[in-house]
Picture 1 (tube, rainbow, N blue to C red):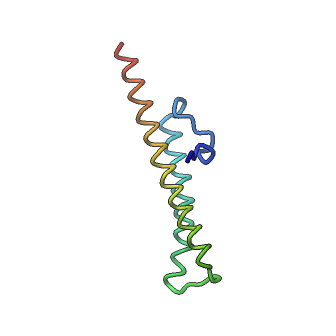
Picture 2: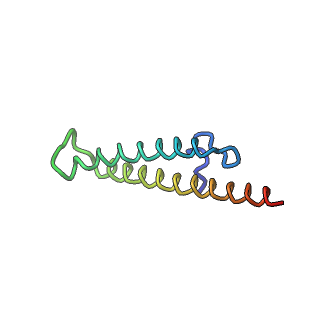
Length: 89
């Protein structure tokens, strides 16, 4: 399954370290907000009862953000290695 559509114009061949930090910040913020929403369910801070389907979708959302982070960092690392190889020529 491709998650390319979720990476906000992510192009590993044009990603600076500043852009990497910004991308990771956005992804972790989204995942954290979903986790905080779910946390209320387990601490009795119900803002509105979430159905099991909503909880499953929320957990899936966190998982997708984590996969996006993994892919983004991996792509950035590969790009940096490629740059190093080109600079050594």
